[in-house]
Image (cartoon, rainbow, N blue to C red; front, side, top):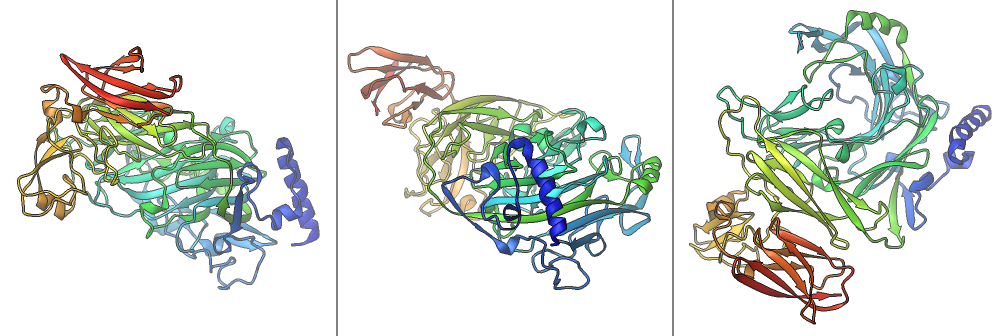
Length: 632
């Protein structure tokens, strides 16, 4: 890099970061071996993964047809819906930076076609060649690395019309298990894509996108969550839901940020996109945290973007310059050709160029940071209405944000016949009209919060559909230790043991699991999970009814009352029949806490109770059950 060019760069960067009290020198730019700003935690040792990082300084290109390092970046990425990627023509590395350019071509690119506009709210039946091309760098390194992703980027001069982006994504795959991940995308940043008004020019998006397998065919309804729209289960011509089978087009649920703000969306508008900014994203198995110029601007729990979801389909580092409004148009959930007027304006607007100074990936090697305890959790839900056969997502916000162990588990409190929640992801599947209450409990400190969702029918739905309960559905209490998600089921299944993988069963034995009753129908030992999707599960277990269907007909019994954790430090959770009265009694026989059971799980804060032995008394009608509790 020429000294004059670099001195100019340093001056620009110093000006950019001066507003947050940071300076930026040559060593920071070229030789820095740690993340920039707040992401650099003192207790963490980092290493740079050079197999997926690039300073864009080596101009000895492996392939002379491409002006960048094709050893770590792909040559021909897959085309998108309303433009084409042309890396050979639109990407150039020079003078220590990478430049990506978007162009307009009046003749179009006939290999990629879109509907010729929007007619009465629907895409035109006439297909025409797209008119725009751009460039995309996508990494080729195997696997995905948990760590910190950082790039210095200068946005394009023009607005509106293009979006310089730094993101991670993988390929859309098929998955026949309901609720499992089929696509992952982490947007470290997308610049200048929020509308066409100058008032939104500085808005930067730092979002998440995902696709999971769904049990029903989804359709896009633009009238919901206006002006964003939403996906809901489609109603067929006979007034019922199109349920299963899972395949590559019908059985999928898109999770998009403007429909699920708490789970997926962060924005900021305090930085100038036309300047050089440093964008960063810390991705761990627990959460995802975004930074701009060393300042944290948002974080979300990582429930659908873990590398373990499908290690054969890793997310790839991507740098691109996408086409945006007014030069693309969205019509009934599909891209179409923009208006003739906008196409005429495109001749003067393009070409547009973004600049990338470097991209680095930092992998943590060790962490000696002091432990920070959890002290609270609050649940938030999606903005989109929940319909029968549809899905929503519940998001836990754990405090403080710096807490070390932010793992959690979801449970059902009531309404398991109405909706089920995945114990790890918080994805809710609606089974029938009604309401259901869910609880999250943190691993650290057992803090909890409850939330109630309402399930409505779909418009034009005239008959009920049998929506299958998804695998991984949360139980009512965490009593099994084998990780299969089982619990004590509903308290209505009197005297029926909970299925456990460690137990051995004989033909005719009955068990309960995830709120349903099963009978072993062959001479196996019953090791396969009842209600599972495997052939083994189907061969061994026969479903004979629902525990919830008989709820309230029997009284409580001692083996159905669970007290956990025991000993307790901050919180104690007690499972019992709905309508029970639960009391905590000290060693002197005094009632120190009491609650009426509104659901099957009741929680008490025990922080203000002295250490020692207590009794838990659960009264339902004329029956009283007593359990011991130790406060530690």
